[in-house]
Amino acid sequence: MDKTVVRLHVTESEVPEAKPAKQPVAVPTPAENLAYIHTMLRELREKASECDWQLAHFIEIAYLHNADLLNNPTKMRRHRK
Image (cartoon, rainbow, N blue to C red; front, side, top):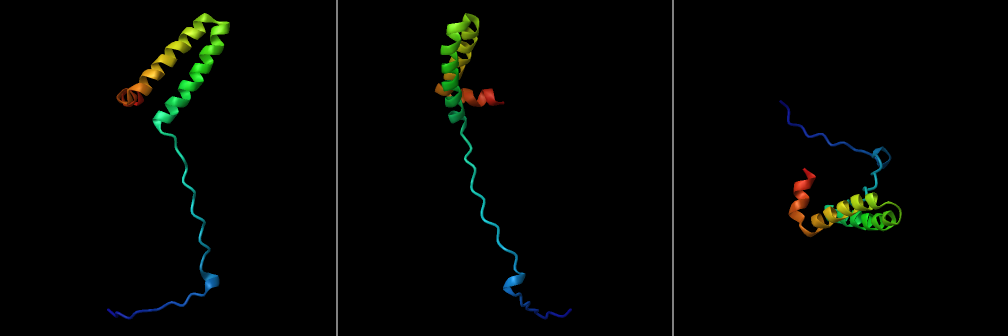
């Protein structure tokens, strides 16, 4: 077997253009998601209390459940499964 080294000469016009690097996508953390949901539930609860007490009650339950998850991160892992 021949061990000859071959050198290729490539002109710049033959080299493909490099693609620009992609910007990293910011992904919210679970805690940030829960904080956002907490804010939305608080606003919904205030609006619902003006219209329907039962709807306000269900939103209140979701709001308290969300607050529990925010206060105890170990529960977050349990609920994500």
